[in-house]
Length: 120
Length: 111
Image (cartoon, rainbow over all chains, first blue to last red; front, side, top):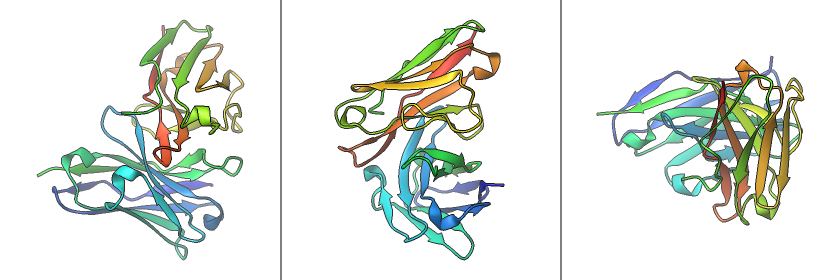
């Protein structure tokens, strides 16, 4: 079964860093780009960046430049999203999403989401 | 603050047709970038409904259709059902931001 499985919820203090994983199952990991999207409570989705699991190339949203890092481990079919200098506004559910085979950038498979809470 | 604007809410009776607009600009929809639509139920991840403006993924009923014209796109739902109550988001690429953007979101209520 094609699916993305994310790591569990995190609670962090302001100024700390977090690393969320997204493991792919049921398809060729290197054949589909992975995007990261976050959603603050009561808000709409917000795009953070994309990684090519094949070559490792990344593109980040301007507002997260310098704070977010996407990496991948092809041996375990896992993508990681690291976010530094956390502040309360980073409290959100973080999702990974796979680009569909039939489209250059639509996301057809999503992880279940990882809640990151930033609180002192 | 999103660059893609949607109405906050739309509603309709069971069986009726509703449409959701997604208004952008010359740096996103108007520049020719594709629009995708997602449905999101509370506490769950978004689900792809329409990709590349008009296409339905396998398993999505033909009650859902998408269109695009100029700087706007629309999602139509015909034969409205109770299970269609959810939040709907459009998505596209924006060249001025050099990144992807989501719409402000529309809550569909079945009366």
